[in-house]
Image (cartoon, rainbow, N blue to C red; front, side, top):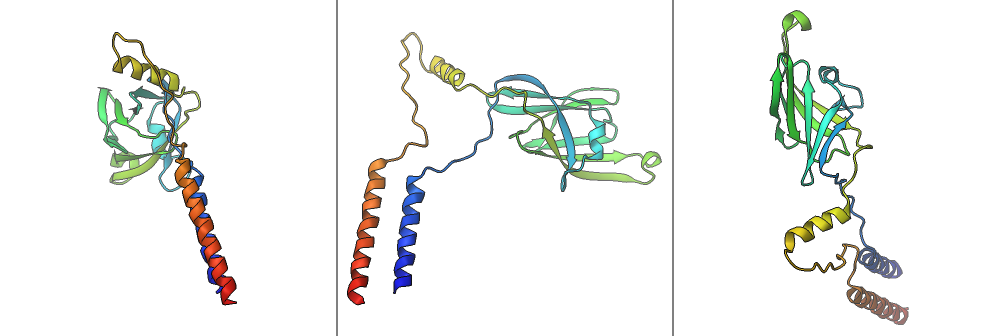
Length: 207
């Protein structure tokens, strides 16, 4: 009986703390709109080794941030071998092509983490020593340390400009996800204390 009582109390206390303490949700960084040169390295999909395909691309890459969306442009110097490239959001679009050089663009998603890529690679037999025609999965790791993050103030100013015309802007402090309905939490805490008291009294009478 005592073990069941202690277990119940533990569950109640844990439930209250989970509701009272706001959860911290990690969000991907949002960068300032613009075009940037960004260092990168192509790594094998299953480990941290540099992929052979890394040598088929010129450095750095180009990052285009538009409306909070990250687009990456990669330029290969072996377009005869690399037949196609796909990013996490789908196939890359060819931006330009000249000789054995091709520049492609794809939507990259969160570039603060490794970005998954797929490539169709065909290497001539006289170079590879055999027929080589394979689809490869690899990861692009981008160095975002020099890319400026978006300013909340700038985003707020843009929003106010778009939503109001010819009138004085009155800006209310935006509510954040960390605000909690205090009254609800107090009620839940009171219920927990009440149940604790009830079961404690019941346990005392049963002993």
